[in-house]
Image (cartoon, rainbow, N blue to C red; front, side, top):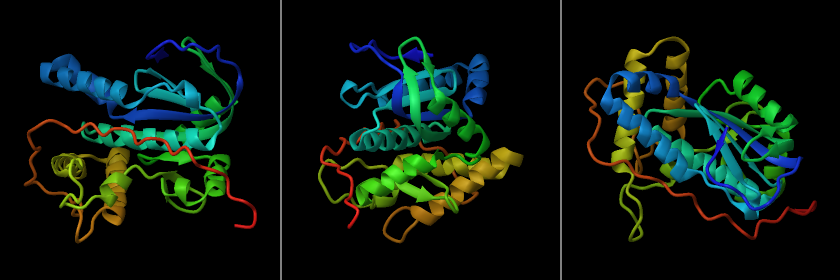
Length: 270
């Protein structure tokens, strides 16, 4: 595993939130980069986007490590850290969608050790197994204990979540697109139109050309987008369309939202 920077505190084995993330399509990207210089530049952009999105935060006990197509993020078991973990996963997923890379993962809570050299623990193992066995679609699932934590904290945390069936809750990474309206209401608001066109192009190509499990992932994403994003005053639905072309121009780097410092658990009589 590789960690982006040294930390000043000595890590210990203790309870943490653990997110195990897998970059779907990364293997294909690496293979293409061996043959094509343009694809090699794209791969470097993906890695640069990853390093710009995730960050270590000693105050939240948050640190991340990555190896090839796998990323592990751990954080303190606190409301603020869970907020920031959800935000980080949303931001990373949206940034990588602009390179036709899906993120799939799982979040657990339990014992874990995370230093610049080593990452291990029961929560790490459970997150890895959960990602492999349960998170079939391009989503980051929550374990039951993590969802219970979010429920206890109420709407401020639950706004980050969507449902994929009974007892299957995942990080709602399309939230920023679902909240967006084509006419920005505030000066300086990030305009995502070109990024949406690029995502629509990539998904359209997948729907037209992919087969089997890869196609099923694109179809799941299409249904998710059309359910939560497509609206009359927002962005349109995504469909298979041979007329679409990948737009020119730079990709937007979405920044992580500041964590909410006033999160508190709900009382039992709320």
